[in-house]
Length: 464
Image (tube, rainbow, N blue to C red; front, top):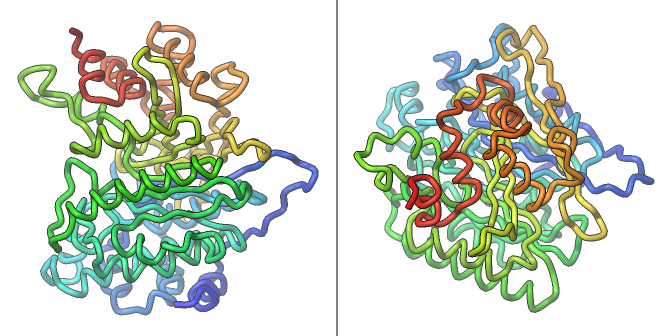
C-alpha cells in the first residue's frame, strides 16, 4: 500500500493532521514519544467481524460509524474512542516536533485468542493472522496521518505478531507485511541500506537521526531476547536473536569508529521486572527476582551499553505502561547512561493514558528535558465527551533539577530512596496520577532503576 493511498484514505476520513509549525528561531530540538497503544478492535464485540471483512483503507469509515462509545477504562486496552483522540492529542502537542518514536505494542493483549473468538475460527487461522496485520497497519497509518511530513520510528512490542504474544516469527509473514509501512514512516531517505534484510530477519533496523546526521538510531526488537519468547510458528528464533546481537555490536562499533553517536529504541526495558518480582509467590527472595531478558542476551546487552557508553546518548523503551526510568551504572554505582520509559496509552494496568514530548540540544543531540501529557478525565471521556489532555509535569520542574540526564535521574532516585521530597512525587507520577505506586513495592522499583544485572539487583533487593 502506498503512503498516498492508505494515508489519503485516513485523512479523508477526518483523522487530524498537523503540519510542523515550530518557531524557526527556537534552537531547541523536540520529538514525541508514545508507546503501548494496544488497540482493541473487539469493542464492541461485533466490530471485529466487520473490520476483518473490510479493506484496512476503509477502516476509518467503519470506526467512524461508532457514534457512542466510552473510552476504555482502567483494566482495559485502548478502544477506538481512546486511541483516536490520544493520537490526535499527541499530534497536537508534537506539532513542530522533528520526529516521533513509538516503542511498540500496537495490538491488544491476547489478540489472537480474542480474534479467534470474534471471528469464530481457530487462533491459527489465516483470518486471524490477516486481522493482526491489518490492525497493525491501521495503528501505524493513523500515526502517519496525524504526523505528516515527519519521520515516525516504530519498534515492535511483544504483542506485535500474527502468531501470539512473545511469538514473532523471524522471516515470517507479519514482518513481510509490515516492512513497507515501517520503512515509509521512518523515511526511505533515512533508513540504512540493510533495512529490508534486517527488518525481515527480525524486526530491527538502523535509521539516521533527522536532526543529527552523525547520529544513528538503532531500533532493536528485543522481544527476541525476552525470557518469555518462543518461536511458536517458526524454527529460526534463537538464530535470529543471536544475529541481532551481532548486528547491534557491529553497528555500535562502526558508529564509534566513525565518530558518531547512537540512540536506542526498543520495547522491553533493561534489567529486572519489578512488578513481577514484587508480586512473586516464590519461596525465597532470590527466587522471586524476574529478569526481563534471558541469557546470554540480558548481560550481553548491558555489556554493549557499557562498552559504548560514550556514544549512546539516549535510550527509549516501553512495555511496563508506567512513567519509568532505567540507569546504566558502572561497578561503583556511578550513572553512565539513561533510559526513559514513557507511560502507555492503554490503561489496562491501571495508569492514566499518557505520552511525552522530549526536548534535546540540536548542537549535541543530547536530550535535556521532557513533559508528560495525560488524560485527566478517563472516567468520563467518550466519543461525545472530549478527553481532557493536560500537561502532568515537566521533569526539571517536578524534581528541581537543571536538566534531564543520567546524573539528574540518579539524584532524584537517591532522594526517593531516602524518603525525601521526591518520594511522593515519584510514586504519584509513576502511575500518571492515578492510584500512586504502593510504598511497599517501592524497593523493587528503585532497585530495578539502578541495577540492571540480576546479581546486582538481587543484592539491592534481597540484601547480601
